Image (cartoon, rainbow, N blue to C red):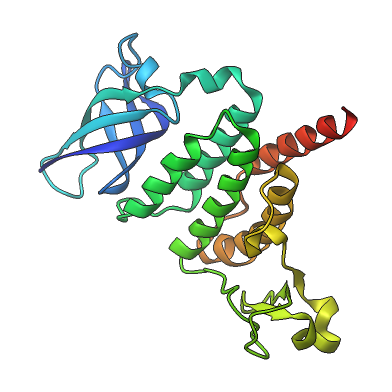
Length: 245
């Protein structure tokens, strides 16, 4: 068995004396693992940094075997190690993918969107907003997409201000009635407005609720990765520092 693809490095872990097991999100073969022989060497260490784009060739005797990778660097993002916000985002993205994405499940659109977000690592506002939309897509990809197009009660498309915690559907002010205090607020960024770090932070409260109440129990997880919360805390510090100026 053999195939060639492009992938985003998610993580590596040591395998034997000189090799590593590489986890990568590939464009056409989903999240995939394989052994990189000599992966701890000077040659491979720079190209196997999280977030890097690599050209990978996977080989195995049978399709369900771990197999091995031959890798070549396409684009490095090792500079992110020196940028606190970029590194926090990179860690949140890679660990969340490792935690929730089934292995070998085709995810071409998710690969493309992940790459788009990673391209904004040096631009905090674009990164924060892109990350929010990325988490919204993660929910949809896993079968828990939110329907925010119209009110679940009245069918109207205007004055949408809430989200039902049960159905994940939008609810208008009129449709909420006496149940308003039981509903989640619908952030502006989820309605297509707002493009700041603060807007993204509000939006991430919404995605966090559904990640914790739908994805975590459905996959039998204990919790979301701590790196996600650290990224949000990093974004909050950005807004605090901005307000002091």
